[in-house]
Structure formats: structure tokens, C-alpha cells
Image 1 (cartoon, rainbow, N blue to C red):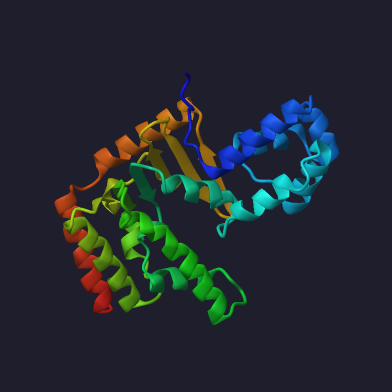
Image 2: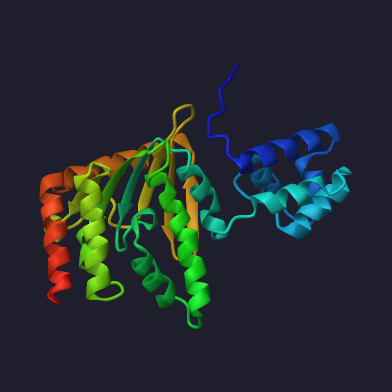
Length: 274
């Protein structure tokens, strides 16, 4: 029996059921898209588990397939608290056994302290309340469960030096954040490496990158920009991303030297230096 190439996420199961019901109704993706009022490509994304339909689309799918609200009700259980471009990534990182992350300018979300995350959320929201920031921080905090869960994936963390120099949330918040990262590295919970400024150009200078490996399916990659994200499962793209990560890692400081640099930066922030 052929093994699924990607992890079996709830979204994929939703998409598979949609494909089964559509096929049983003797309807093509094109025909269903006409009834849902969307493109055939979007139906393909739904069935592949890459996207979830909006509630109105799910309701139209139910009407087209005669499924009596089945997909609309299931959608309620799948709706993510995360941004649409990040929702699939958030699901997959819960299943990964190895996570290799590179951060270009900010501490990776799964390693952020509450105060660091709150400072970030406040920086890009023109109007916000304390309650809104608290809710956003709680959602991000849930991602940290992978650090303490039973699976406990191996986490490689590669940081551009800009990450540890940019003072997010003030000197004490930044010092606390860097100390947390250092403590995790010293405890063996993450593998830490820093790409110092004097390396100059490196293979990942243009983007953050997360690579995830799984016990029974092919690896995937994820890159993110402003309000956008791209989950890659194409083997060629994933292989190219793995090569770029390896090249950048080869330019980084050793873990011992990286720890020393992070610890020194933490003390500089704590004393208002830099």
C-alpha cells in the first residue's frame, strides 16, 4: 500500500472526504467549483488539505453535494486561531520529529517569551486593547507546548545576529528572551547556532525558513513574509531549502560560541548597552 507523501493532518482528512464525496456524486472539480463560485484550483487546494473553505463556501459545497451541512459543521472544528497563511504550518509543527528553523530578524515564535510576543503584536497593530494582545499571546503560547509535549521534537535553531541585537520590548524584555534561549540550549532542548554579522552574505539572507521532518512522510518547508506564508511540499523545493539551510549552518558559530554570544548580548541588553 502506497504511503501518504505528507503528514495526515485534520485538514488533509477534510480534503480527502471532500474528494470522496465529490467523486461519489460523479462531479468534477470544475463542476463543483461552478456551484461553489470559485476556481477549480481552489477546490484542488481544499482537497489537498492546503486550504480550508470559508463558511459560505462550505455551505455551498454541502448544497452542491447534498451532504446536509456535513462540511460546514466539520469546518467549525477545524477553524484555526492562527492566520490563514500560518494555520497549516501550526498543525504540522505539532507532528514533526525534527524542526530546523532559521530566523532572520525576530526570535522564532515557538521560542518567544510572553513579553517579547506582546511587544511584537503591539508594534504592528495601529489600535489595540490589552485584551486583544493577551489573546494573541495566549494563542502563540500554545505553540510552545511542543517543547514540553511527549513527542519533544529535535529543534535546530539558527539565528542571524540581527535577531539577538534588535531590542524588542525594551532592554529587560530582550535580556529575558535571550536568557530563555540560552537556558534551553544549555539544557539540550534546542541546538543553537548564530550567524554573526561578519559572515556577510549567507544562503538564507533573503528569508526565514522552517524545515520539518516526520516519522512516516516526506519533509516539508515553510517560508514567511509580511502577511504571507508558503508551505512547500514539492521535493525539489524542499531539497533546495535543505541545501540552503546546510550552507548557512556551515557559516554559523559553534553552539558553544553561539551560547557565549547570546549570553553576552543578554547582559548587554540588561545593562542598557549595545
